[in-house]
Figure 1: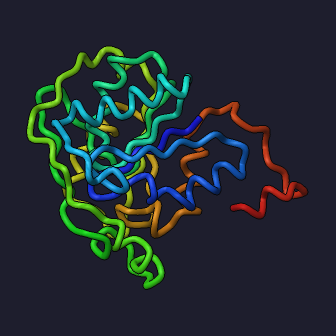
Figure 2: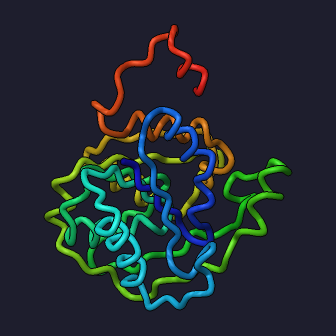
Length: 223
């Protein structure tokens, strides 16, 4: 099961094409919208605790286990607290995600869609009306890093264009010896390059999720 968590100003809607592609490959995919954004923009946010509750409650009520958690942008700050408070996570992928250590504040990712690599008129027409203000988290993130350190963690860096505020996270991932990848797309790769994003997320996911796809299979056309 993939749980795809969006970053600032977006919503579960941003994963639409990526989710369709992964589901067509046989995966279960969940795309929650964090409180205060997307279709939940009318709801108040009480700091990072609200967003932690969003994900933790979804995992419990939907009885999701051994999930492959994908965190985009500011959602990377949820990794440590979620891992410390749940035994339902099998692995974490940071898709241009912020790696936030205990005691640090989740920073903003500056720019908007064109600066995030979304330039196709059709993508802008679809995404711009759905953008919502960033519900910033100004308090430090607090968690015991032990549980997170036990999980498989992977980092995907987007490079076209690169995002300066994410470079420290990229360096942290490399210094920790994690599996790392680069994706030739901008920060909002799930909108600008959904096929490439889905393909890479599947490659970073559970290794026994699906049997190999041979050229004779009709599934090969999905990629």
